[in-house]
Length: 441
Image (cartoon, rainbow, N blue to C red):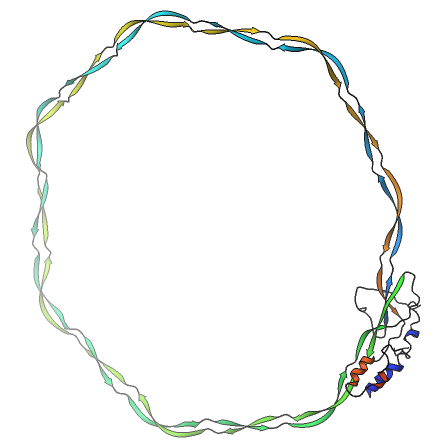
């Protein structure tokens, strides 16, 4: 059986894993693959073993010039220069005083108004005279004279009864007819036909073939001084496990057939409308009579007659000159009076008082204190330091270690649940490979 073959290979086929891994570096060593945190290399194939190798960082010595003291500057103080000088100092500033000049008066005569000039008005009465004038008593107008209308007798036809119509009713026509009527419609009866089965055997895949990325014990050999080997991994191929089972297979599926049941009819008599009820229109002509009527030949009118205006002569009093006033001037009255008048008003005369000075000696700064700047150069020295030329990193590296083919103890226990216990798989999971099952080895 297939599961017995798998369990037998577990012990005998994996005994030489440690002895087969002769070297991580050989004549046919492949290039390293960068490690980016993945569980396995993306391009790894079945039958290959890849180890995760840590490469230590590489350093280099770098010389550089460092400024220990920056460039600065200093200052030299140059003292100020003084000298004695004479100058005029103000003791009392210039001032002024004022002398009062009294006012000059004189007596003068002048006319003073006792009563101002005025005026009065004299009334002049109005002048009237009698005049004749023609006055309108009645204005010109007009009146209307009525002209009666002219009539004559005329004969004409008058409608006594207008034209109309009436309707004659025509009854409907019926007949009796025979026809077939369905009592029961056509139907179907369903007949069930059962399915036909047979028993057959088949194999069930209880554990499908698969590959797993597993940790491999690989001997640590031929590593560089700056390299450290981590875990080694390989893709292990595990074959499929099957078991035999029986099942019912349908030969002919269940179906149905239908039996047709014909419809049932009966003959009935029915009254059918042949011609619908209608109406026939009868025209009734209009009735006329002759009558005499009075017709207006000429309508009533009016003639316009002019009435002249009427006048009369009357006497009226007209104003020749309207009432008015005459202005009379009244002169002003004056008197002579004596008055004291200022000829020259009181004034002031300004008197200048000159300033008073004295000569004093004073120490004056000719050149102020100053500073002279001088430069101090920077101080440098050469120092050496270690710089990381290449940081520490990890790579995947393929080795010549043998990849196991078969199932581990845990896989055999899964198979045992299907059929029987796998007694050959009771050993430890740390199996040593004896045979290399990779193709070409």
